[in-house]
Structures are given as C-alpha cells and as structure tokens.
Length: 95
Image (cartoon, rainbow, N blue to C red; front, side, top):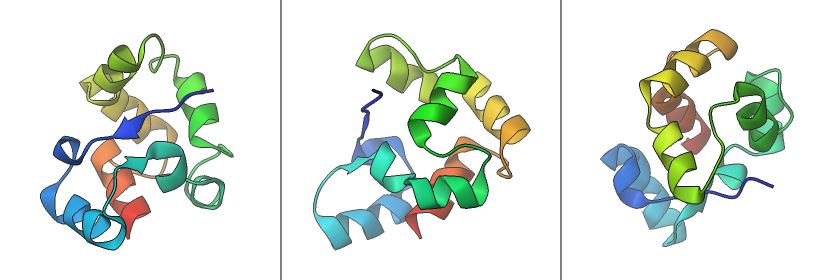
C-alpha cells in the first residue's frame, strides 16, 4: 500500500494554507485524492492504483516523494488524466 504524507512545503502556498487552516495537519495523498475524486477525474479508482500504473512512484518513501516532484510524473499526469500537471491535479483535489 502506498502511503505518502504531503508536506506543507511541497505544494503551492495558497492551496496548502487552505488545507492547513481547515485541518491543522499534514494531508495524506490517498485522502486528498480520494476514490470519489479519482473516479471523477481519472480512469483510476484510487491514488495507489494510479501510482502503480505509472510505474514511476515506487521504492522508499523518499524515492516516492522524489518521483512525485519529477518532470516525468507531471508528463505522465498530463498524458493519463484530465489535468495539465500534478500541481493542477492536487490543486483541484484540494478545493
């Protein structure tokens, strides 16, 4: 099971400020990109399924975080979802 914590410093300040204000905690990707969101916006039923399909997000937690910040991940997101980038996807998930 893929379980990655999204750190506040990893994403846009406005997006994360809203999350921090609402929750006062770190956000887990599988909660942010929940099954309802994933089914509505992708062909996948979960973040874990999408990450596994990409074959990019694997290895240690640190390697997975690095993969999520890579240009290859952005490209994969643009080619396999309705979003232009990973940032676009998580921004949409956060609103």
